[in-house]
Image (cartoon, rainbow, N blue to C red; front, side, top):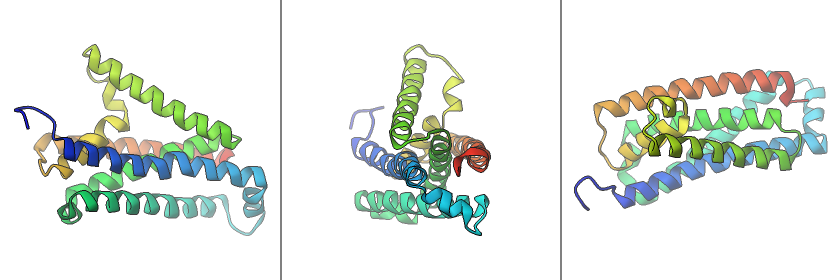
Length: 195
């Protein structure tokens, strides 16, 4: 590896771990929620004794756990020692909470499966363009508002076993943004998402 270069093995592992989380929480959750809405399953759940909060908690228990399990499996295959590093689990949890918040927000705003898929893809494209433009034009501070700025840095540091003091700042930023997304998703889902 060249001095100052990027370790390709941990970079690929980071990308696969993030893809697993985003696939389950940002793409699968909105698609399945909109399918439930289109088929009337969500309405049947709403008419049952279950409250909107209980429906939300069920989604919050299933999708992030599945995403974390898939991401941990991928990370464990690339580097089994990663599974005993607490910083990895902290970063993975922050990424899962943020991803479920993003996915649930998209699911609450989209009415159809097609709209959910387009919303997830558009979200990904907008964030990628924002981060790319900021990097190319040396725009400071704006990338800090994107969960996708912090999570890859945290997971890459954990997977490369190179955690420095500033990665803790990225972890704190990831948790703050994850909490914001989760609160937004909860408000939107309780107001419109289950209908």
